[in-house]
Length: 278
Image 1 (tube, rainbow, N blue to C red):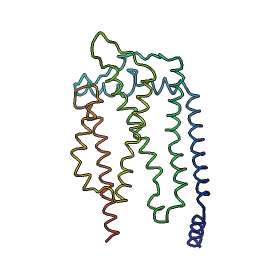
Image 2 (cartoon, rainbow, N blue to C red):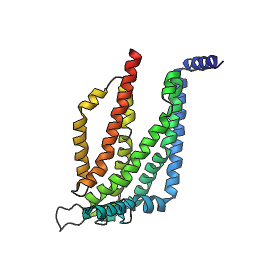
Image 3 (cartoon, one colour):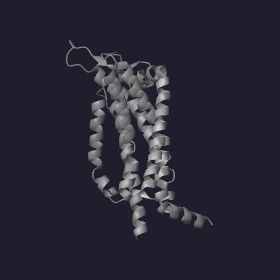
Image 4 (tube, rainbow, N blue to C red):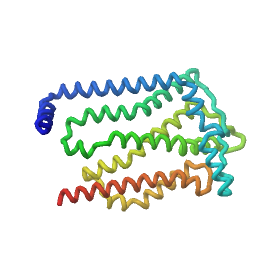
C-alpha cells in the first residue's frame, strides 16, 4: 500500500505544470518573507535588548569574551590578552543614522532567527522532486545547515567581532588623531562579519554537495591543505589585536577544524560513490 501511495504521489508531482510549480514557489517565497518580517518586527520592538545587550555589548569591558581572555592572560602570564575595548567613541553623524541602524540590525536579527524556518520551507519545496533514496540521504539536512549557520554566527559574535572591533577601533596612525566611529560603520561591520561567518560555516555542506556531483575530491582538498592553513593563519593574524600566538590560535583553530571536517565529509562521500560505482 505504501509503495502504491508513493508512486501515486510521484505521479501527481510529475503531472504538475510549470505554472503550478511557479505558484508553489511563489507561495514558499511569500511564507519565507512573512517569517522574516515577523521576526524582524519582533527584534525591532526589543530595541534595548538588541542594542544595549547584544550589538553594543562587545564595546564594554564586561563582555564575557574580554573577561575570559583576561583570566587566561593572568593564568598564562600574557597581559596583552586583557583587552580594553573602550578606545573609541561611537557617534551618530546622520539625521536618520540611528533609525537606519535600528532597521538594519532588526532585519539581520530577523533573518538569523528565521533561518531554520526558511530552510524548512525551501526543503518542503524541493522535496517532491527527490526520489525516495535522495530523501533518506537528505534527512536532517535542515537541522545540520541551521546548526552550522548558528555556530558561525556565535563564533563571529563572541570571538571574531570583539577582536576585530578592538583592533580596528584602537588602531591609530598618529596620537594626534582620535577615533570616533560612526554608529552605521560599527553596525555594518558587525552584521557583515556575522553573516559572512555564518555562511562560511556552511563549508562542510558545500563540500559534501560538490563532492557528490564530482566537482572536487578529497585528493584535491588534501593538495591545498597547507595553502588553507597558511591562509587561515594570515586571516587570524590580521583580525587579532595582539601579537601573541594564543589569540591568533583562538581564531585559527576553529576555522582549520572546519576545513578538516569538510575534508573528512568529502572523503566519506567519495568512498561511498566509489562503492556504488563498483
